Image (cartoon, rainbow, N blue to C red; front, side, top):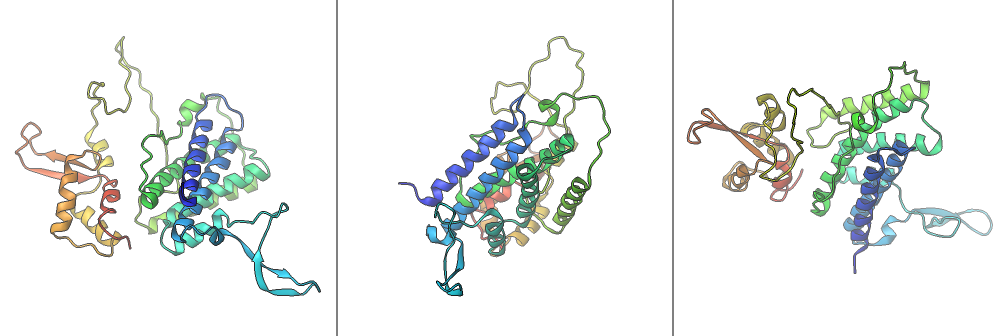
Length: 326
């Protein structure tokens, strides 16, 4: 029998997958609003799963309690469980749990900022509507993409659950909607306030060293090929697939850290970290995996020539299994 925490985790993943599938449909009215609602639902269930895990799976730890009223109308000195119209217990919501988990250093502050932005979009979608649909789509693309990245990182960190079986991405706007004739976008005061709020959250992230993000930008480019028969290309592990070469600039964007940068980040991230034989014993086997490291040779045709290793930030997720986070 599944624990309550595991049941909530499974439902959180299901809600998030549903949000992605709805968003990526080619023709679906209310796409952005539906994504916001389901994505927030997924996050709330995930936070509740973590809360139960940290509190011995006691369902009472999720219940909202309040001071009731005595028969004479005076305020009771005892707290009782707050209940819905159907007498079902109220549970703590996403905002409360997120604040608590950040305070307990379980949830990354940047992930919390991203959730705040997504909550604003969800609230506007549920309680009213967005007048500038193109602006909503653009904001949601950036905030939603970051939310999905944060969701995958958090599930891995909290439950050691790999979500690679799912396609956790939002189809870029270039594919979701065909370009329309350019129109002037006039924002009302509420929409301008929202954009300023998101900008404030984005600026605040500069204070943190984190894998998490408030917003992620997509950049899609199309180029005309001169060849008549151009093979189809996609990201895959198939050794027989068409080979695509990356430029040096693109490689450095994907592997931005050298050894010293990685080691410095480990010192800041882990309270029990030391640059010793244990560190090298954990790090060196990861050099063979291009997901974590890329080796650049002075002479590319000579593997014995001088070389330097560059690391992808994903390597920290592996090191998390061997050290304690600050």
